[in-house]
Length: 236
Length: 236
DNA sequence: GAGTGGTCTAGACCACAAT
DNA sequence: TTGTGGTCTAGACCACTCC
Image 1 (cartoon, rainbow over the protein chains, first blue to last red):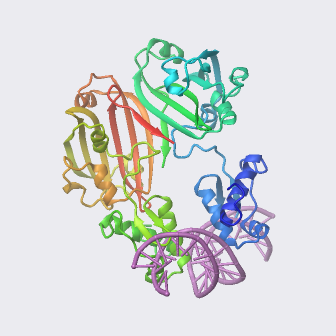
Image 2: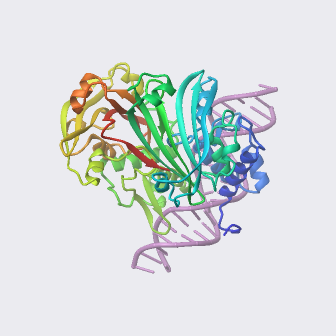
Image 3: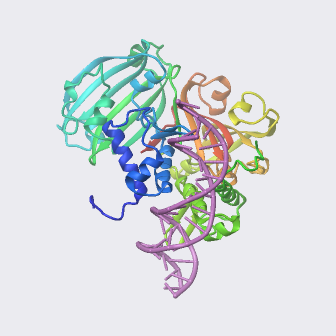
């Protein structure tokens, strides 16, 4: 099915061409992609067909279009409709602030309850574990405790998590297939309050996420955000 | 700008026509809307233009299309990936509990700041306003304060909101085109604490939503959930 | 003025559903 | 067989940007 010959519509071929080009870095963020005219010639299709391909990618926020000027690779990553797939580091940088982080724990463990259940693996299955605090201009904004499936993220322990977030590494190592999240409002317990530099008992947004890759659970994470300094946003 | 004559593209006129028809009940859920051929004749445009209008509404999940059969009004149920489009009443009932609600306020107001800004209307624009508490087995689980655009939800004030939630009415009156949300964790102020029967200061999940229909802001809502009794869930 | 995107036309062929 | 949607063409005019 991978090499289906005639079933893929032309506009989809063009979309794929542009998506691959962006993935490979042929066009970086902000770069102009070829004009509709040029793509129409290159693919030997009418401009209407190219227009549909490019317009759909613009609707999907992959590209931005400026009438009279051109079509450009959209600046952001895919945050899109959902609750933060975005890296916390990018979020901070997008605000023009500086991001830093502190790795408090980084080790390997053998799965036991309740992680056995969360990961849908057998007891003893190897998991990697990290506990990191993220800072926005030096102010703590998130604690992130994460467990990763060693089979899917074999190099987890040798990453420099002060430079790349676990999320960013996992996105490369185990491309996201599916995610599940739970959002709660909880009073900060003492340990969390200390890490976030907030009074014990202050309301926090707590996000629990599980991600899947290749039909298996790739990672489980719990993130605490101080309610006074953070809010989730999104659109549909 | 409301009565701009020539700037609105033909495909947008057709989209509006279909959205209004659904809002007015001319086509109910599951009903077939006119074929592309019929719409092309009715609006005196080419089929390609109609196709774009209908395809976009299908992408927005307002319609569903079946090749060889026709185009139908989509069921207004989809919660799926996103943060609660689901009615709170359905959520409670899905858990096998009984839902009830208490209408504390139901009135009309003229838009002033900050609602003028949130609604993108002129000062004095008519808005309807409601404040409702929802109960799960008699336990308060959500306060819902909502403002609705009177132009898009003309019958808002005569609804029986102890039987149908504002959300459910709005889904029919002004089919959802787009939504935006913000989620925060905030300590309950006294007024909220009293309505939810929780101690003042307890962490609450606060969701702010704006919905669009026919290119205009249809409603703005603020919902408070006691953190101890509620959590958001979702998947991607 | 040259190039770009935004929209639209009046046809066409195909795949599929209903009959 | 008829009607539906899915796709595509080869033009066209317009509004806008950039030079």
